[in-house]
Length: 468
Ligand SMILES: *Cc1c(COP(=O)(O)O)cnc(C)c1O
Image 1 (cartoon, rainbow, N blue to C red):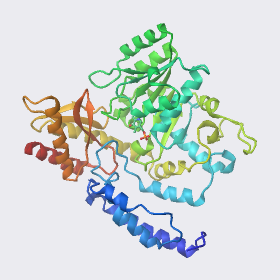
Image 2: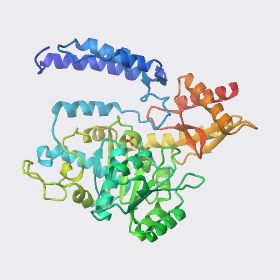
Image 3: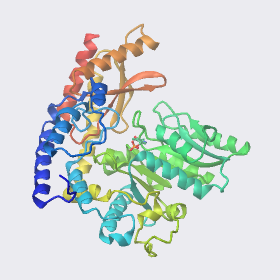
Image 4: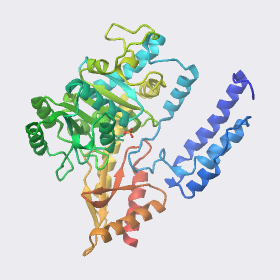
């Protein structure tokens, strides 16, 4: 093929061939191993190739992808994926992306595609509604939580610190996601300007210690400006006391950012609303639709309570740009975010929500909370299992204990337990350290994970524990 413009027949043919492969793949997800990366480096090496001068048949390329390359991976889309933070990847979003890329309209500037820009603005507005933000709130879609946290820190810096901001101090708990430390560095703050605040027995920030640290820093000539709180930590799903923190932030004149990348969409459930009470009082919130709304990777968001702060932080003029909007309710995303040209992320959120309504997401999220509770109560019936973190949302952590065994020997026992569970390939779990102890995590968040697979995984944990 030399002409880059494909004929209508060829386009239809490509879609047909791809559709067959994709649908077969999705149908087989439950039967695929939960993880299979043995020999992955060899595969990667065998794939290196020089820039091709001429083309190949599409079918041959699909074969490489679906037969050789895709199977060697964590099955992140399958029902047994209880590792890290699952997403799932709603197929509707793939269709939305196909449409978005095919029409290739530009949504960074309102007047380039007013209806499509509005559609993305609607999605942001729905998120604000879920959080309970006022009409003045504003936000945008990012590629993920890391970039949302980064923009939150930059915006807080611009709003609360002078141009010379090297005396600025920000506070995050010892359970904060590592993207917060990276974002702080990228935003210009070296580690000396980032305070790590200890957490309590449930891994929630100790607000009283935080209050003391703020006072101590002020007395030492620092300028406290930002608290980054957790709306569901990655380690254990811990939710900080957001009401207390907003009181403290308000009293001290600090910006409160809540990293709810993992936990935020649980606001759609009653249990989640209770756990996350006070979130609506935060100055900014990170939400990751590619986690809590089960979308494909590449969709995060940042919401800011006083939306005008985003424009003050980001807007820059240029002579070659089209005319931008004056009216507050018409959004030029390029003026309130760090990006100019980018993909049309809104459609992949809009389509599944419009097709199902939010109620389908609400019940799927409630199911995840119930499954995490079921996992905890079942684990309690297994001899030797100790729960290290009960689920506050849909993550829990446990380990196997043995009388007389501690320290590195105990960690090693649990490492072997984890290997044995994962070797059965029906569920894929990962580990973390909690207060220095090796802990096995279960994170239930895929829309494809239901009771049957969870119970199967729990039986495998029981069997593996009895073999050790
Ligand atoms: C996943 C996660 C992040 C990072 O988000 P990405 O979308 O992976 O960039 C930040 N904070 C928390 C709490 C998370 O769970």
